Amino acid sequence: MTSPTLADLKMLAREAGKILRAGYNKKHQVDYKGVIDLVTEVDREAEEYLLEAILEKFPGHHILAEENGIVEGDDDHIWYIDPLDGTVNYAHNIPIFCVSIGYAYKREMKLATVYDPMRDEMFSAERGKGARLNEQGIRVSIVHELEKSLLVTGFPYDMWNTPNDNLADFSRFTKLTQGVRRLGAAALDLCYVGAGRFEGFWERSLKPWDVAAGGLIAEESGAKVTNLNGNADYVSPPLSILAAPPVLYEKMMVVIDDANIS
Image 1 (cartoon, rainbow, N blue to C red):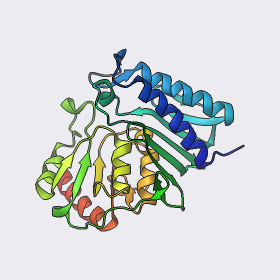
Image 2: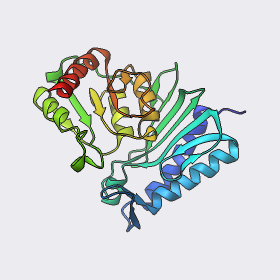
Image 3: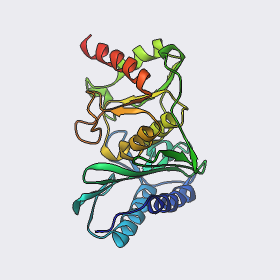
């Protein structure tokens, strides 16, 4: 069975990004998967394009996609598709969103692209070959002290009725660092860690398509990426993630562990 190349993923991400950019700042048909979990007609249009294009060129591959769920196929070839990461931003005309595409072979992430069509920023990575932003290599920050770091996080859609709301971690890190941002697009958060724009990212409640591509990009940029239990498999449930340069990763994990036991 044929495997894709990184060039294939970049082409798919860029074409889906054209759909997002064409629909940006227009009135949308907004549906609700949850109280604050939105989906627009543009999410569906971009995902339909991606599914059709992938299955035409790589028939029989297995696909996990945000809006359509699972497209059954060969488990040796798994795609992780988020056609519009940052839908709430998009629906409010906030230009922080992206297309995220990851590909795994025999359960190991191999290829990743995250494309921001508003800035024309294409983050990409291939296992063992490093990560790039628009063909320039990227590396994580050299900051190792929490007090000099800028972090990013996110919150679950059901945070009003779950004990796993991330507020304890958020409060602690806010007091220990230069600040904690919340952009609303986990794939970009991970890429920004890889590019050294943020020193670290953590989040407690995610889906595999949120982190599969961005996680590989952060890893190939030099970040240590695991779930919050320290497990290197961050795309299997229960999903959580921590990504940071190795020295800072250890310091962030201590804070997260303290928050868990207090």
